[in-house]
Each structure stands twice: as structure tokens, then as C-alpha cells.
Length: 376
Image 1 (cartoon, rainbow, N blue to C red):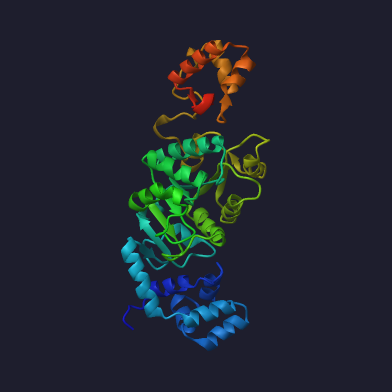
Image 2 (tube, rainbow, N blue to C red; image 1 turned 60 degrees about the vertical axis):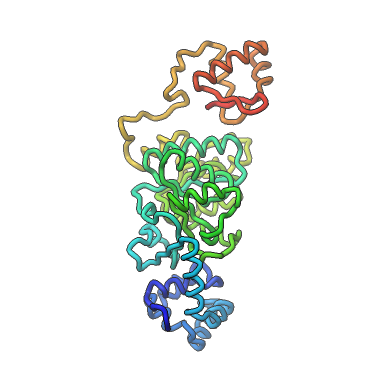
């Protein structure tokens, strides 16, 4: 054999088996007492594989996959893919394998990554998750929380998906913080393609990782297993916006099993995308309406004598006149049309526009397209 057969390669071989269930690797390692014995008993050993299959430890398709896999040709093809894409690999026997993942019930046998694996050893790490189709409120909250938390040195972890995931990653990068993307396919494939810019940025200067080999397509069936890694790497989890039935709730379940703290940003009772967050608050998740809530809880104290954040942080609300204060009372993180503001305040058009322009100059509000306003 022309390759070095060591424990690292044995773990990579186990991770190569696409027909394994998440728990299969853990069960096999327990049965055989470690990676070396597991490999020796299973590689090209049809009689042992038959026993494992008949006892239900592995599936028949797994036995067939193991018997049909040639170690040397598989590894040579894999090494070629990794070299061409700048991909590196760690397994549980490597000193830089993420320590938090060693605490999982079903440890990923292999982690492929691009970027700086050292980020996964940071002191404070927070998963930010939520809807792939968030409201404007959800996007605003993801931006605000991720940027402020990243600025305080908390690593933001998410799944590089559309919506809340990508907002969390982008905001962390803009705040010059650190972020980790956990993928449900190969780290040589950007998914979705709309995230191509942040994907390349993170591959260069942050960390993108996966337990799936390079070239593996991103599939829905992979996401639950991916989610256990998101929660596994995180010290706590922040749910920004989520429906009752969603992949977000699967991640929450993993985090609860792992004993992680859960934070949730509340939403309006009538919003479908807030039903999930409001439900987990009812069930005991910590209500977080300010990034400071999480900073205090995770880090113990606020840095540099920082005070808890309020809506008017850094702004002199006493400088507002009564009309402006009334307008502020009608605005939130969901866009409000200017005509609605005019009617509710019994104000004329020109005066309303003037007051809103003054609020925008002071940094209180922001005008979106076509006359819609939100709190900034």
C-alpha cells in the first residue's frame, strides 16, 4: 500500500461511508474499542461485516459500500480534490480537532475545512440561527446582534444558508469579528450560490467546515447532522426568527440535548416567523432583546464599563420634539408606510416629511424605498 495507514486515515475512511447513520461510527468505535480495531475488523472483512449487518449495527448498504471501497484509489482521488481546493482535514486524533466536538454523543469522525481552524478554539462561541426567509425585522435583529456580539469577541457560528444564517456571517465580518460556517456538503461547493461572496471571504479569512468530503452535494437530508455540529461548536444558541416547524427547531433540540443555553429574540404574537421564538421563550429560553443580555450572560461582565443597550444608545432622545417622539412611538423594525404615519398623527404631508428627515439626520430612523420607514 502506497499510503500511510494511520489513525487519522482510518477516521477519514469511516467518515467516507455515505450510508452510515449519524450514530453508526460511535457504535462501531464502542463495539471494537477504538479506531484501529474498528478498521482492522471491518476493512474488506466480509464475515465481520455480515455479523454487524445481521445484528443491525450497520445497514446492508453500508456493508456493500465498505466492501466496494478501495482505500488507496479513494484516498488518492480525495487528496487531489483537497490539494486543488486548499482544503485541509482533522480527525479526533489531531491536536487541532475542535475540542467542543469531542463532547458530542456522535462525534464527527472527520472535519474538512478551509480557513483558520484555530477560530474553533475561541473562548466564546455563539450559534445564530433562524428562518431562511426572514422578515425585515428578523434581518435587522440578526445584523444588530451578530455585529455587536462579534465586536465583543464572540465567534458567530451558523450554517451559511440563506436568510438569518448569511446575515449573521456577513455582520460578523463587517464588525471585524470571527465567524464559522458549518456546511451540509463539501466545503469546495458554495451553497446557495447567492452566498458566493461571503463564502469566499470566509474560506480565506474565517472558517468554513463540514464533515462531508469535498465534492459532496448539499442535501436536505444532511442538514440535521450539520445542525448538531453548529450547536456542538457553540457555547449557546441564539434563535432570531423561526416558525414552529422548521430546521431551526431541530438545532434547538440538539442544543438542549447538549446542555447549551438558548436565547431567543421575541417577536409579535401575530407573526408566523416569530411563533417558534416566542414558543421557546415560553419553554424557558432566555428572552434577549439586546445584545448586552447575551454578552452579560456568556461573558459574565460587560467590557469597558459598557451599559445595557437601549433603543436610544448613543443618541440624545431629549433633543426630540413632541411630534418626533410621537413618530418614534409608531416605528419599529418592520417598515411603516409614510401615509400611515400621516393619518395616525393627523399631520400634514410636508411637516411629516420634515420631521422624519430630521429624525434620519439624528440617526433615529432610516428611510427605505418608496416611503417606508424603520427605526435605525
